Image (cartoon, rainbow, N blue to C red; front, side):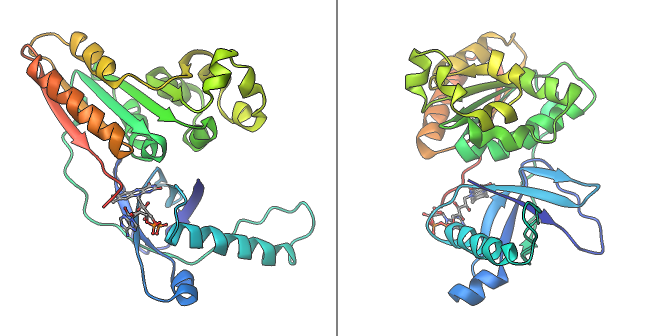
Length: 273
Ligand SMILES: Cc1cc2nc3c(=O)[nH]c(=O)nc-3n(C[C@H](O)[C@H](O)[C@H](O)COP(=O)(O)OP(=O)(O)OC[C@H]3O[C@@H](n4cnc5c(N)ncnc54)[C@H](O)[C@@H]3O)c2cc1C
């Protein structure tokens, strides 16, 4: 996983809504590798004040891999100019294109809003969950089921959160850690071996909201439906691997069949083409 903070230096101030994505181009990479490519990434966090957006990238075999290699080269060369122990943020010129975003309904009009994220798909859900909690309360219940193979994949989501914002975010979050299946049988012992994860994921999270199993998505949808009364509306937004979105799509289909007067709005954010 690669985390990148992009400082926007445009004369006019930029506003970015939750769930937005940008197209990223790194001219240096294209000079090195030839051929101009631009790749889309969701804005995982945006600080309006600093005009800085965060991208969380799963490293694959093309552009993302080249970007990692470029940062490693930069790190190597910056080592020669920085004194020992001195941290120096790597700065690589980039250009971003912010396409117009799909119109989303006002999710705070729904009785219940369910976000389901798989791995890096959390980068679509997290800004939404934080945004909804930052709005004046309307009685909407926000639930976020996030399935990851490694708890380290989530620490960026907590990095800026404090106090009420952290409490609100964790109150919605159900974190499913799937690859430490062995650890689950041996209790949480395994996590002890991941001090960095433990230090970066607030203990409150580790305590209450972590499950060492895959989420049963059909059960999650059923629970949401049962928590609704006739005339209520629920929104379901999913972003994750194809298998996960297919399971959610199927479960939502069944929910709609059994909905007993509950309105269902469904959104699928896909990262592939
Ligand atoms: C709207 C949107 C938002 C996304 N947000 C994120 C994100 O926040 N974090 C993240 O890790 N990934 C995100 N992705 C996927 C990400 O764009 C690709 O994984 C990345 O571009 C792959 O780059 P690569 O060259 O290293 O991959 P490669 O190894 O060359 O390709 C692997 C796969 O990535 C996909 N891909 C490659 N290039 C593109 C491209 N230009 N446009 C779309 N898909 C491409 C294809 O499915 C391809 O099969 C998003 C994709 C979309 C469409």
